[in-house]
Image 1 (cartoon, helix red, strand yellow):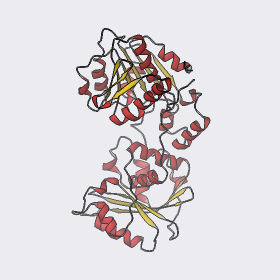
Image 2: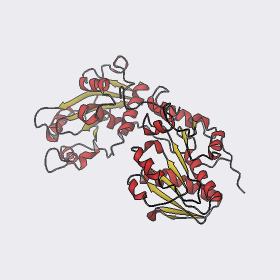
Image 3: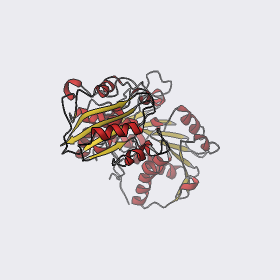
Image 4: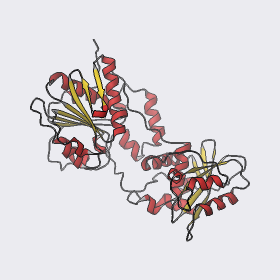
Length: 402
C-alpha cells in the first residue's frame, strides 16, 4: 500500500468537481504529477469511459507528460501498456488517448469522458482548446476538462482563466515554485542564478507565477551601456570565440574571449555592401584573426545547409578558409535572449565601445520587432552565450511525494 502526500494546492485541485478548472504554477510545482493523479482518479471513479491526455508537441507529450505518468504507474505497481504509435495507452482496462496539438484536427471523431491538457497556455491559439473540448461527450464520464500550465503572457489562456472580464466562474488554483516544499532549496537558488534576477521577466513568469507581458518592451532589458560598455581588446593567448549570423543582406560576426566568467566582446564585423557573402566574410575574418591561433566559430546552425554564396554551404566555406566550427543547434529565440540577459544581469559581459552596431541593437530591439529583419550582431552574440553559458531549463519533477 502506497501513501501519497500531496501539498495543499495539489489536494485542493484534485478535489474539484466542476467541469472546467486550471492548475497554474511555476516550474517544479508538480503540475504534471497532479495530471497523472487526476488520470488515475478518473480511471478509478469512471471505469466505463475513455480519457485523453494532450500536449502541444509530440516531443513534449512523450518526454514531459507521459514519462512522469509512467514513473508513477511503475512506482505504484499499476499495470499499463503503451500503444504510442496508435496514440493511446491502456491503464488497467481503460484506454487513455494521447495526442499532440500539432495537428489538432486529428482528434476529431473521438469521444472521451475527461481530458487533461499539459502546458495548456502554450497552445498556439484557442482553436486547439475549442477542438479538444468538443470531444467531451461520453455519457459514462464526468466531462471534466483540466488544464495544467505555466503562465505564458496575456494570451487566450489568460483571457479564459484570469482576465477580470472573463465570463465564466471556472476555479483556478495557483502556486509559485517555492510553494513546493518537497523541492531542494538548491533548486530554487539555481533557478535564480539561471534567470539572473528576480526582476527578469522569465523569472517572474516561470518561478514567481506572475503574468508578464513578454511581447512588448525591450528584449535586452538588462543591458546598461554605463555598466557593460568598457574598452577591451583581443589577446593572442586566450581562445577567441567568433559568433556568425548568415544573412543575404548582411553578414555579421563578433569576436569574443571568455576570461574567467566574463565574456569580453572585443570587435564586430558587419558586411552590408551589395553582394556581401560568406566568402567575403571568411576573407575578412582570416585577415582580422591572422595573429590569433586559438579560435573557433560558433555559427548560425542553419548555415550547414543554407547556401548564401555558392554551391557550398556557408559552414563549408568557413571550413575551407581554415576555421574550426563548433557544432551547435540554434536554440529557441526566447531561450537565447534569456541567456544573454542573464549574463548582463550577472555583469559577466564587457563590450568594447567600437561595437556600435551591437550596442544599438541591444538598446533598441523590442519584442514587437521581427528579430531577423531588425538585428544580426546581437543574434551572433546570443549564439556564443548559448554555447558557453546557456540557461538550462529545469526538468519537471517526477518524484512521488509521500
